[in-house]
Image 1 (tube, rainbow, N blue to C red):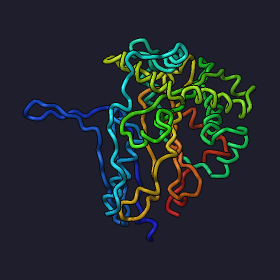
Image 2: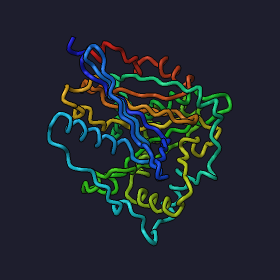
Image 3: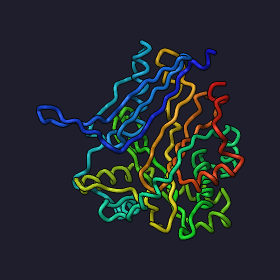
Image 4: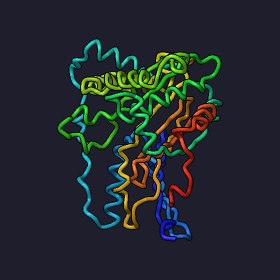
Length: 348
């Protein structure tokens, strides 16, 4: 049948370079792998992996759109910009006390960061892909209260579920969100085509008891909105650039992945929005994809959740989850939001 001849796009976010040394002793690094797998039915899977230290998902989406346009012989979108001046550190840095305080809460030199959980914790993590009906997304937003985005409402709901999966020694729950800084640093759109990493990871920490018993979804959504808003500013991103430059060449760590201010006493989960994935533009000349998703096997104990628009363009979400079995169990036992992604939905 024709609908089985469609293709899927699968992107794998990695954090490791693969070095290759040439005979002249000059080493280079493979930062991207691409693989197209064709099936007898006529369908195909386009698999991509890229190093997150080189670029963020927004940047890689630009590559996918340009690749698809070139393949089908269409007009190629404007070339990306690599202008370093757009993210140059300021000298001297005019960072305020408030700017420094927020950066110090969100990031730290790797040498002084909380120790990661044992490798056995990360090894037990499982991967799932769910779908969320458009009506359920809308219902979450209504329950979260006026002025709250769909992503904030979703994150608040997930935060409450995450609190139900904490172990006996974890009395706190840390929820983080990845925020893109392009529009914050350049409201005029000057950074729209910037290729690189323009991200921060903000978070909040609440007690498990409060999240489970005392806070309604609207209360949790208010908290999410507060700590997202304080990081979604031009000053925060420019201050973060200054901070990273001053720290070089030492590596840094995002505290959200390590439980934030809760440290080892907190269970942690990160939401990274893939809602900007241009699924309707990834056409290689064979039609639109039937399915698209990201995969990010974070090598630590924090859960990683990425909602994306359904390739059906029907307002539904496809949600990738990399998490501990305990959180996955809670998500699947909660019947109103996370639904199994069935073949009949993808290819129907």
